[in-house]
Length: 164
Image 1 (tube, rainbow, N blue to C red):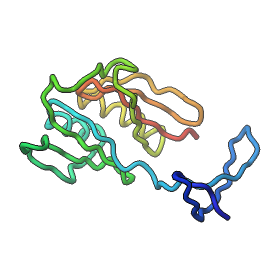
Image 2: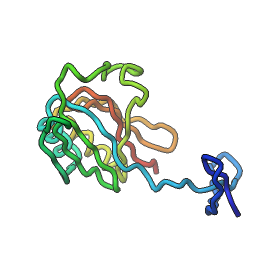
Image 3: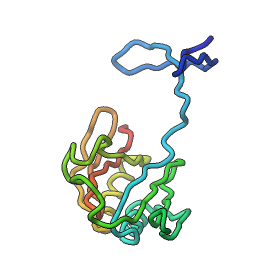
């Protein structure tokens, strides 16, 4: 069995059976990716941002470089599940857009972190507040619990947990 790939290549790929509670079962090729690797962001204060993610999510710095003439200072934080946050420290005036306005954040509006349960989501909500972030209310969005929050730079993000 084959499936078409970009650039007119044909490769052998497995098929998966997908079913939603309200839809009939269907087959489709599995994605070639295994998940999200990292999200890169810019901050005017890398130490503050690292401290926030460490306090709110227990994220650990797994790699760090000093600024050079060619590249800003960088910290890579392990977010769990194989994903990381790559944070670059740049001058405040060089970050374009309005981090508080949908559409003003650019083409990628936000990213969401996953936690294992509603109880974990409630715990993370309190940790975000203690770390200096702003939080909304936990809400049900389809099959997930969702919490929107703003980090210490004002970037709107989300934390999700599968519902029941």
